[in-house]
Amino acid sequence: VGRLVLVLGDQLSRDLSALKAADKSRDIVVMAEVMDEGTYVPHHPKKIALILSAMRHFAEELRNYGWQVAYTRLDDPDASKSIVGELMRRGQAHGTSEVIATQPGEWRLIEALGNAPLTVTQLPDDRFICSLDEFDQWAEGRKELRMEYFYREMRRKTGLMMEGDTPAGDKWNYDHDNRKPAKSDMLRARPMQFSPDEITQEVLDLVEARFGDNFGDLHPFWFGVTSGQAKRAFDHFAKSLLPGFGDYQDAMLRDDRFVHHSVISMYLNIGLLDPVDICNRVVDEWQAGRVPINAAEGYIRQVIGWREYMRGIYFREGPGYTARNMLGQTRDLPWFYWGGETRMNCVAQAVDQTKEEAYAHHIQRLMVTGNFALLAGIDPGQVHEWYLAVYADAFEWVEAPNVIGMSQFADGGIIASKPYISSGNYIAKMSDYCTTCAYSVKQKTGEGACPFNLLYWDFLIRHRNRFGRNPRMGPVYRTWDKMDETRRAAVLDGAANVLKDLDAGRVV
Ligand code: FAD
Ligand code: SF4
Image (cartoon, rainbow, N blue to C red):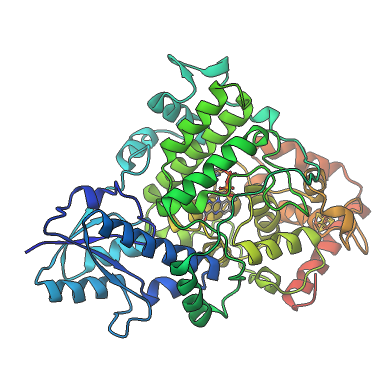
């Protein structure tokens, strides 16, 4: 009797460890669209459609390569509600209780498989550059786990942009050149879009019927759903947008939701793209002289540095990580995160685009929605669930360390050495949101003052015990201490009013 080979919705890679360990001639691949996975947070309909359609296409591909695939559709009346339930059902049908799996990217599922009344072998997920053991070895005994040092190890390991043991151009990191605001440009390329084929169309109808009430627009649906399409999308990015990636990485524009970003995280995270392949492609462009060094280095740093580092932290910190709340923040997530009204243009733009695209780029996530939640004292657990639900690329191993660690400082500083916070100034500098906002970013107090300006100080004062002694934050506290008494009182009064309005559900 053959064994079952589990392939999850974010494991759609032909060289998945579970597939490599299996025997095509007798083992059966199990893929299942189950309700539990669709509903444990209210996922964006585009995210659900992407995963289901990519799963169906991948199952076809496996069959074409000679695999036997037992595929369960969401609307199958016999389907069980969970992955483990489906494995048991298939196991009974095929007379086996042996399962080969690749370790899931989420503690919840790792534990479910571990506790299943089946013999499940969970193999390491080797679609990453750094194994979890290797990450632990790197981390062991270090006082601080700074991404920059981890990244250098990954550069050495992969040899990407290295000349022997030295980094190309003699510098590891060109971020210094990468903080330019961008201008609207009608000629700038856009991410490659794909029209739904028949399989996707069927999925869209199903998602509309089952998840149509979730936050987020299902249509127009333009994501790629196969590795071939994902590769074409990346190729298009590499040729047309990568040269500006470095310079404009942090820029935000009202009329350009993607600026110079690649918009491929959702493909990478479900297995349609390989991180080393895309980095090699980037290096080729740079070596051919079509892409400046700051763009190429900046891009590979995100992929072999940040992405791998986040995964290492998630698994190292264990299942309790998502429940951390070191700053003790408890306010409920405001309704405007789910599309309710807000007068803050930056937040409205980021949420609107999230609703329409299931996408926002890094700086929108970090310095607009994340920054506001942190400044306003929102419960990080609720912030985490929001991010996990609304982005097409959100899987816990990468979402949680970005939200709980980097953005909300809820892990007490494992990832970030100081909280990522800013007043409205930063948003005004990096975007064109403020020019059409109901609030004035120049106004620091009084009616019409930008809420970021008020809450910024309120946050710092609320948490002075924790951050007052942080050498990197000394200068901001000194600025506050030098401010005159009446102004300080006006700032704190203004902040208290904003928070009162939030709590009362009034429009902010
Ligand atoms: P680009 O800007 O073109 O970057 C290229 C690639 O680098 C991305 O596709 C991604 O794979 C990788 N990358 C860049 N930054 C990071 C990072 N901080 N962590 C991990 N990978 C990174 N990324 C996710 O993949 N899933 C998430 O759920 C997620 N949640 C986030 C939540 C918050 C609060 C923040 C601040 C960041 C989050 N990120 C997440 C990281 C980052 O914002 C996205 O990877 C990026 O916006 C995806 O868009 P892109 O493909 O256009 O990326
Ligand atoms: Fe956002 Fe403040 Fe600028 Fe308005 S003025 S867009 S609230 S930063």
